Image (cartoon, rainbow, N blue to C red):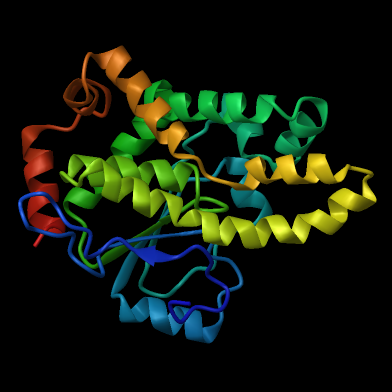
Length: 254
């Protein structure tokens, strides 16, 4: 899929339509899971997108455990979206332990984490830095976390909403991670059986690896409640000026 061997959950946001008839420029905004262990073909394919920048949303601990592959001529920026206080929310072990203690609590915890994306100071500052970096960027930017579904998923939805993409369309992009996550989930089923989980528990366990549009809605609702409106969130939370928005529109819409 997409010509990649070891770059998972990849997609180009190009082509997504705006209500006024414009569309996101292709080969500018790329999202993916962790770019580690890339094949020569993967690197060649990324060069075909005119990749110039990689933005990594993972925690300090995640980066230390699995540094991304460096590509000649491509700049790398680390923006820790979670921060030290939220580092556990990026840890698969945390989610598995939470599931085993309280399977029904996983959705609540994901919802809380997404609200933190839009209202927490570390996350808000991080997403602000990311979006501002795009204003003057040339070529393509690849942004990622570990699975490319939550921190990256919110970043894509946020950016697309700022660009004027309809909600149904940025939600469609967000939900495309489900196909990749189902593959990840299947690799954990055997491990779960060996740990003694029942078939019912294993079925419920899928929530850890899924994405859910209610999470995005919860994040935006929290932002609107905190800042009065989405526009208030963009202006006062993300601190994006009218000039920043104009640059984004000019650079990423056609």
